Amino acid sequence: MLQANASTQHTSLKTFAAKMAFVLLWSGGFSVAKIAVGYAPPLTLLALRYGCSICVLIPLFIITRPALPKSRADWMHACVVGFLVQVIYFGMSYLAFKAGASAGVVAVIVSLQPVLVAALAPRLVGERVGVRQWLGLGLGLIGATGVIVARSSLSVHSMSGLLLSIVALIGMTAALLYEKRFGVGQHPVTANLIQYSVGLVFCGPLALLLEDVHVEWTGTFIAALGYLVIGNSLIAITLLLALVRAGQASRIASLFFFIPPVAAVLSWMLLNEVMPPLAWGAMVFAVAGVALATWSTSSVKPRKA
Image (cartoon, rainbow, N blue to C red):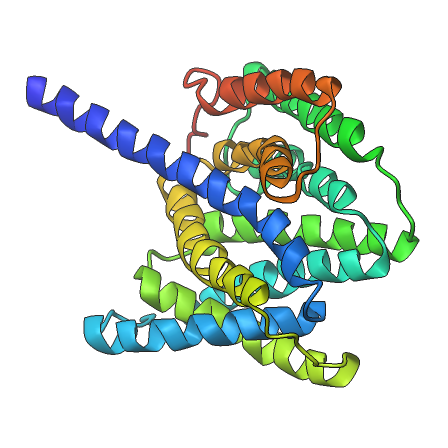
């Protein structure tokens, strides 16, 4: 019994650490991407990011020799998730910046994702969402919105940017639900290699067709690209997929309510973007909402077959 309890506590600590690492790495991507886009066009930046990620993964693949998807369906599922995350979510988010949407607008729109996941999870992946979890999701949305409103006033300069942000939201929501329902536990190296190959196949040609692919190879850009490749592309996505497979989709999605507040703090630290007092107060609601939605074990029960 003692060994079982110790094992459970160890697993819980590992899961908590994985969640916090994911939140920090994903949140940092907003500030770092904002820096990097100043040196390269959005799709060009993504193509470079995916190409560099593949260059890192190929030697790891040769060394570790991980298993490949066993069937055509498994290949298709891995490619679909890669397309939704790498092309739709990241592609539309970066294009939204270029179209005129502010970082605050994109962040707060994407933070609506847990609400969509919670609403769709019962029908699509057989998860029941209880009253306490809905309350937590509501508090988290209020807090995340408050942080972004206080920081950026949600100024939208382009309707196309707003629409692109909504498409990005739909892309990540669909990716989480699809991975939960159809995803197969692939080796991280295999899963990432497939995802970034899909991203490069789509973003590379689009960058050549639609953008001036000129890149300013400064030290700042190289450092930012390195973070996007290692932090966002390799570690964060691996953690996200592992967490989705280990827990309920609606609970993992609620972690995204942490993203706007943490991103605001990191942008303050990295870019000197000062947060007003209202933002700090709203952050309390965001954290409380995520805690209620994510750690309420009695509020979400699996649907019986």
